[in-house]
Image (cartoon, rainbow, N blue to C red; front, top):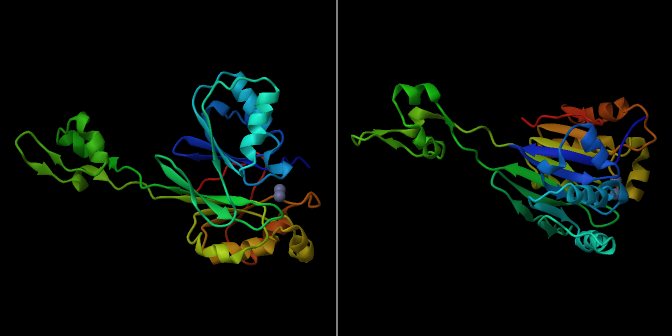
Length: 288
Ligand SMILES: [Zn+2]
Ligand SMILES: [Zn+2]
């Protein structure tokens, strides 16, 4: 068995976010040839070691390798002093702009408002304060109808405005409507990362229609009592929650080390929800 603690890279229109950063994450980024220079945001769901112990090592490497672009870390309020103390006590001078956004696990709130997407918190129910992250794309730009623009001799300098939905007025004053010159923007997609949590059906209202939902499924339902004690979710409950959310796809993860073969977890979730995927080390999953 070769399973690593939690870490995911989310690519939204070429902006990369790292979601959770378990021990060994920087080695795995190297292994999968994902440059940490490209990561703009790091989201940490909670302060159990399997979700953040790789962070200080990754930040030290990022700093050492001469990053200058800013980096934003989103996570529990204790994370900022933990990270900054580490830099302070190791006598490390921080060479790049580093920002922190503190989460709270009481109610959902908007955390990040990026050019292309927003990220809101998902208040989860775990042994310590824990949030998930709900990533929603913003409406994209319209796509240029290149053939039509060429046929009508629309100057390239106007393409920016056309993508924003404006009509084109030619030098004689004739207006050509935007709909003639462009195609509609791509569909808006959404992704929910539900980290360690007890099954929490009241969150379904928040996540209605999410395109892809990652949800922990630590146990099979025969260990429901254990899931309740440790504030985790069973695969059956994860499937049930995906149905309640009317999700497009469910990506299971955070499996107990007791399960060598993950097929029973998938089959159990499929009793409640039809489109189930298993998160596997190094796997790539398209949200569409
Ligand atoms: Zn945990
Ligand atoms: Zn965990």
